Length: 265
Image (cartoon, rainbow, N blue to C red):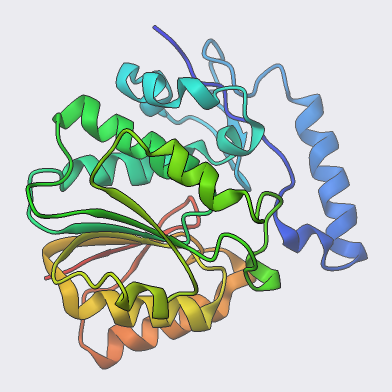
């Protein structure tokens, strides 16, 4: 049985906030280095794992041994960024598979390089055979070239849109959409949405995206907020919770991965 090996890296921008957080990052890296023989090992009795700003122990983490998920991740198994957020990717993969037989569009708002979603799509197709029913689409939104500074990542630039288009060229129902959210969403308006991921690294834009998605959600639709639980984006959580309260909606569930999960009624 294959076993995925997560990666721990201090990617979080919050580590650069001050001397205190920079010192903490160094001490944390040193501490985990000393424990490396117990970490990220299938044979460890402690079942201790460090990745994606999380350190857990005595967990099954069965998804790391899931054959279908292993196969979906295989292409990126040596990519440290992918492997550092593997638990988050498992969450979106399993939730995408869970809605595969329903009617409605799938939207990934802030898809960046599409790697995470491509893994989720492969996993869902392997386990469920299909992801969208006839007449529905998968829409991948991003600025691709010039995002706001907070959302900017290393691969943003002129070549990113082409990269994502090429990545999904074999899927006729997947449409990458270039432009700023939420305005770009209205150019390809969905009437029904059954699954959405929102990852814009901004309280303002995450909320605008949720307000776009909300009236289009089908019963039982799923929305994953990538930044909901991270301290750096507390304002995102606070403002999304206001939308929830004002509309008397189900609460957003804060996950240990830093994500937030909303299930629509």
